[in-house]
Length: 194
Image (cartoon, rainbow, N blue to C red; front, side, top):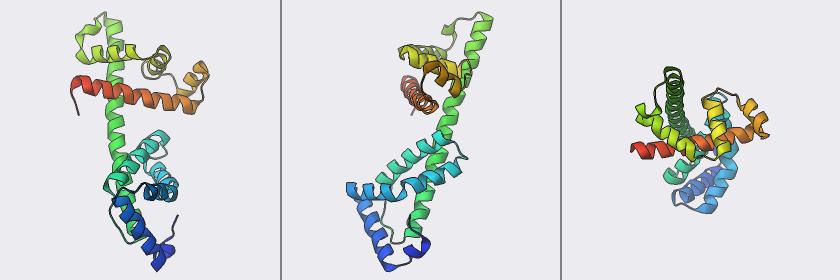
């Protein structure tokens, strides 16, 4: 990590300009250098911005890295570069939060619909979304389906799911994140949404 004092020296400014110029051209070695310098700093920043939500911070960090790779531009000052990185990271975190909120709302609505179908005796064919989600859940491996249904339909905690499966809580969180993304992408494609 560079300090503001280090950024004010001519060597640091030249180094930042060189790094950002190479990033702007898509240089892989420059990206590795950038990653080594800023990954931890960005992760800590995003943990604060996401109010300690580790999964949200990780997702936003990945999106931030992608945006840096796509939109990097030459900046001569380390302070200006860090300000630009923070702006990109905040934007990625907000976008990730919105996506997660929409997806969790979709799952909650499905869970409520599923409960109302169970209690009222209606058939699952009454709603296109319910049908699509049910079909997509059936395409999952049985263990993955049990985890998704456990978390989002029965309300089990990550700790309870970890105990049931013998996995660590981190592994369960990672698996649920992967499964949510997979289901979301499938549903969006089937519903023809962006």
